[in-house]
Length: 515
Ligand code: NAD
Image (cartoon, rainbow, N blue to C red):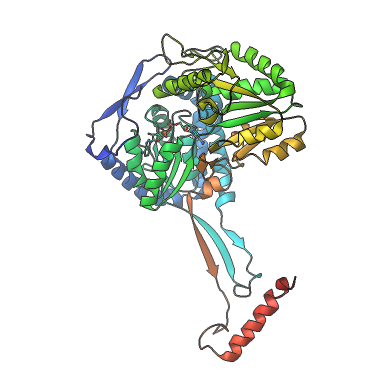
């Protein structure tokens, strides 16, 4: 367990430079190592180094930066076993979960941003002829790196959701300081080693290990904040960013609904429900957290999901293919999951599989399926973030959409039906940043498709054009080559010219007002 305090007042200044915290393997309970708890003074020094290094990194240009990112891509593949080993050891997740997201996503993202950054960030010409004041002038949009980007990450994807967000910031020509979760800092330290070996200049990418106070200290040192974590911490980060007057992007929690219509492929939907609620131990911001099934297929769906979940193997992952469901990474999460299940049972829910923390070594919660659930229960209203799947019978898709939208969160959702036209129509009525039809989660791998939350699930998006432009300052350039000595609207003001300009306005814009 990471023994340092998480949130709370920023005490980083008082922390002695030698302060350290322990990193634990959640699947075994063993302490792996200790890492430094950095304070405000350390952060100031890191920011100075980042600012000094940034101009040369920017000056390398897209191709120079892409070369480093492509080297890192190869390094990750050459060192896949080592990377997966580190992620598994500090998160307790399975080798497959680490491979699919922390390795697979990140390898793809290194190539994607190396290739696409010039397309998203090269100068853009916009038309000037449609406005008489600018006709004949050159109008250019330029994307310049903000300077130093701060990234704060969570523990559930120690590489994909921490280093992953640094890649577009680096591709845009920024320096980056990453503050990983205190629960899983070792994967980020490995990424720093990788970037050094791949020739990234000193100071361009640094990792600030520490707790919430380290994260709070980082915000005052950077030009832009990218935060992934809980809604509660996201609010503190946004307040601090407001004080520093810097831009701030938040990727927060979710409570993703899945709607299964009567005409769905029930077998596929049930397999997907089991996988997308339990992969990574259910510790995925875009996990299926609640399911609404139309009455005619409810019994078949529940029976298929139950059979599937009952067969899942759980335990300390000892190699590839050994278990499907790993450990609960963050110590307090075990009690959150248990309390949601207890609350549901007290209010009338029934457990069909699992339902308890596992006794013995390590920290595990049994893969759990619940029925007879409703919206008075915390498991339907809050983010559980564990291997649980509550399933609710609904009269029709209308009721399902209303229940799906009855949430403070709006990260992702899915609709399952063989009528994809109707599925898309239902998807458009769901209040979430991403909605899949006959799929879930896989959208995260479409790096050209924006991903971000509505409502309490966040502000801003990652991936796509905005996923890299958000790390830039926009500069507009207006360039005049040939012009009159004096424009008609310049001094001195003369009644004749004023009235002529008014007639000109009527000529230009008067047509629209006749309708
Ligand atoms: P958390 O909010 O507790 O911590 C996230 C990070 O913030 C950690 O590095 C922590 O040290 C730091 N932090 C804590 N207090 C801080 C402060 N006052 N100022 C600055 N930084 C501070 O979240 P967590 O428990 O690590 O992660 C789980 C949450 O993350 C879940 O809600 C999950 O849904 C969410 N998440 C969202 C996405 C997404 O893309 N939307 C992805 C992964 C995880």
